[in-house]
Amino acid sequence: MLTGSCHCGAVQIQVPRKPRRLTSCNCSICQRHAGLWGYYEPSQVKIIARKGAVDRYVWGDKCLSLCRCAKCGCVTHWLPIAPDGNRMGVNFRNFDPSAIETIRIRRFDGAKTWKFLD
Ligand SMILES: [Zn+2]
Image 1 (cartoon, rainbow, N blue to C red):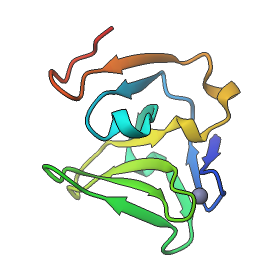
Image 2 (spheres, rainbow, N blue to C red; image 1 turned 120 degrees about the horizontal axis):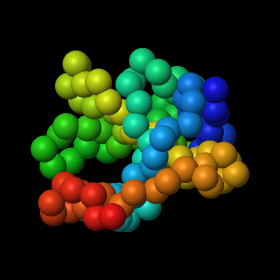
Image 3 (cartoon, rainbow, N blue to C red; image 1 turned 90 degrees about the horizontal axis):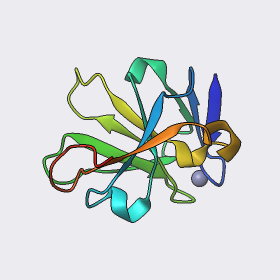
């Protein structure tokens, strides 16, 4: 188990294991907040936060909501909006750098082609 948290600690994120790779995406939102995404099934991830501690942002085709700490603003994860959505993203910028420094980072062209650039 690996635990990360936003800067102020109001939002904790627990994942069962390290992801095999992390994704750096250049879509209109990711290029702004510079997250490093690891993907899981929502049932594998535990978000520990008080009610109201997480703000959500939904835009465009409304397929996911981007979640951030309402206090310190760190983007922590995204969730699928479809009830049967089986994938979510966890932003590993909120984890200890030493825990992720050996994980391969892939560059994903979310802005245009939806393919990996490397
Ligand atoms: Zn916070």
